[in-house]
Structures are given as structure tokens and as C-alpha cells.
Image (cartoon, rainbow, N blue to C red; front, top):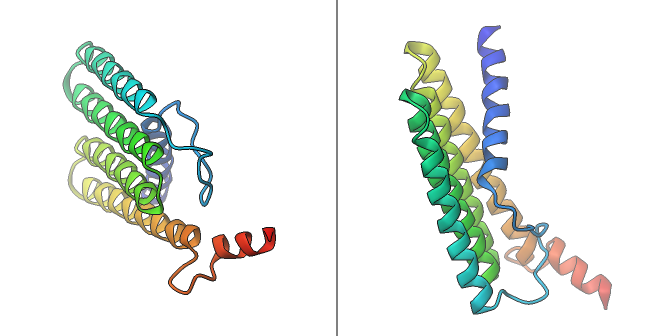
Length: 168
């Protein structure tokens, strides 16, 4: 019973970490393209904002000690990496860029979860790491599914193709 409550707590934590890893930039729904890609100026401004937030997050991490500091640093790096990937996907929108951004977010969440697992010992640590790995794999699979839906799949008859044909 303890394992299931820990597993649920880990899933909730990974979900919360995923929410933290995302930026305040509004994200589009799967299959939805931005009206226009970001301009070069907006892209450069976004990179500077992300770098500034990362530096601020690093300063915040210096105020905590021990394992919490290590977790904080991994979270800060993951948040910055995720924001950069999302910015890149908005600057050069494509199904591949969107999938790459989602994979970066999955990897960032995985890194945070693994770092949190280090606080456990023995079997609990192993189970924690396994749950983190499963959550990462599920997120990557979901990104692949969304890419297929967005592109219409190998035969061009997916959700995106259906939406296009129904608009005609």
C-alpha cells in the first residue's frame, strides 16, 4: 500500500514539475499552428528573458542547502532548457520542433524526479527511479502520438487531415 501512495505522490510531483518547467509563454494546443512564427526580435528577447530567469533561479537555489539545493539547480536548468525548446518551436514551428520541445520537457521532468529519488534509499529509491523513467517514457510516447495526429500520420488521414478537409 505504501508503494502505491508513493507512486501516486511521484506522479503528482512529476506533473507539478512539468507545470513548473513550462514558461509563461502561452502554448498552443496540439495540431494548432501559430498565426505567424515569432519574429527574430521576439525570439532574441525571449532568449534573454529565459537567461535572466535562469540566473534568478540559480540565485534562489543558493539560498537553500543540501539535497534541496541540488534539486533546485536541476529544476532551474530543466525550466530553462524547456523554455528554450518551446521558444525554438515557436520561432520555427513544425511538428518536429513541437515534438522536440515536448521531449526536452519530459527529459527535464525526468532529471528532477531522478534527483528527488536520491533522497530515498534501497527499494524505495529503485521504485522511485522506475516511476520517473515510466513517466518520461509515457510523455515521450504522448509527444509522438501528438506529432502523428498533427501531421496526419503516414497516410495523411489523421486528425489534422480530417480537420483540413472538413474546412473546405
